[in-house]
View 1 (cartoon, helix red, strand yellow):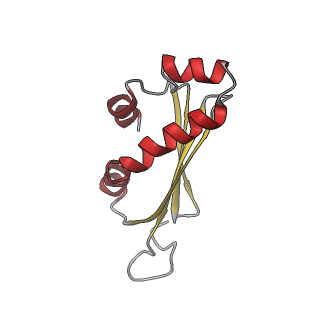
View 2: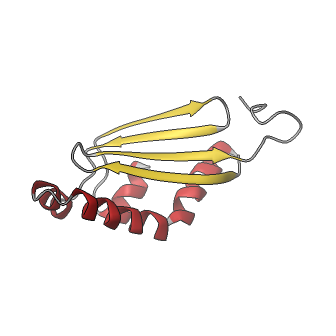
Amino acid sequence: MVRLYKELFGRGPTKVKTDFIGGDAVLCTLEHSLTQAEKALAELGEHQRLRDTRMYFQYATEERFLEVIERLTGRKVRAFISGLDAGKDVAAELFYFEPAQGGSPSAAA
């Protein structure tokens, strides 16, 4: 995620944490990823405009996010949700997996 953010936004986050959730999802929390221009928008109180712009770029490049997670986990992503708290400079990338083959949805856990 750090490399992908750097490629897509020109700056990678300085703090990242990735957690598996119940075996069927992955949550990536990224902090301090705003560019200088995005920080300026946040300082102006333009949090919604900043979120809208960031989300536009996130979903325009959705396939790159999915490719990274699917390659690293070996699981097919069925849903991708991206969010940003522009005031706190914390982003979340949430990936839900297709049910694992040969068992219950969390069989891969």
